Length: 135
Image (cartoon, rainbow, N blue to C red; front, side, top):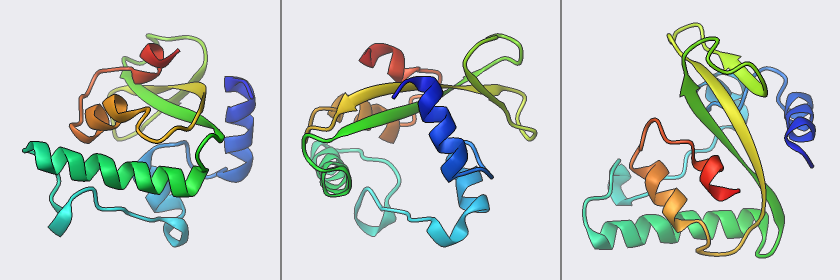
């Protein structure tokens, strides 16, 4: 599935929202699931032990959901100035001054393969476009 095919599939499955967490939660509250990364709903890991737990939880959920060795797609949004990018899957967010451009990368899920990405996302490393690095 190419990025264009993935976008078409997404629009068929989720016509009321792009792949943006807060928008999905608003459009599909009956399908929303939140998985806590750390005990007692702690938001950010601060110790080696907490990162180990966070990565363990994310790897277990992803592996149980996708299946070890299954083909899957990583969809990553990157913030950018309106009009900065002219191609691809771009969504303007009315409440924000920036647009989001989405990249799609096909991969085979493997337990622990994406721990660097999971850690960066958990740390809210804003401004990074992870999918560019994964190609």
